[in-house]
Amino acid sequence: MRPTHILVLLIVLIVLFGAKRLPDVARSIGQSMKVFKKEITELQEDETPAPAHTPDK
Image (cartoon, rainbow, N blue to C red; front, side):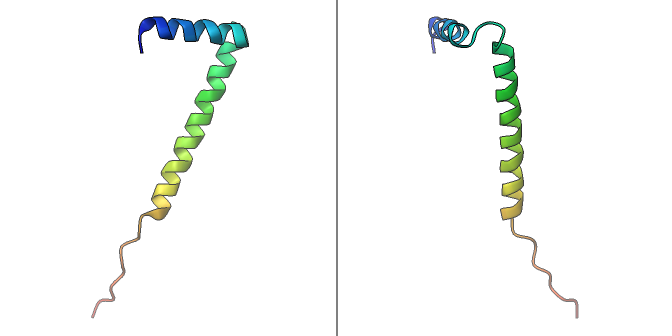
């Protein structure tokens, strides 16, 4: 992305949400991503097969 694209995107976001609500929106997106990553990690850990237990003779 070019810097001008990022600048236009920021201007559109400020117009849509307003400058005062933008930090709240960013915070809620960050929290959502944190929860999403945690769930993905837990899901991957659940799918990892446990080592097979072999009885000692």
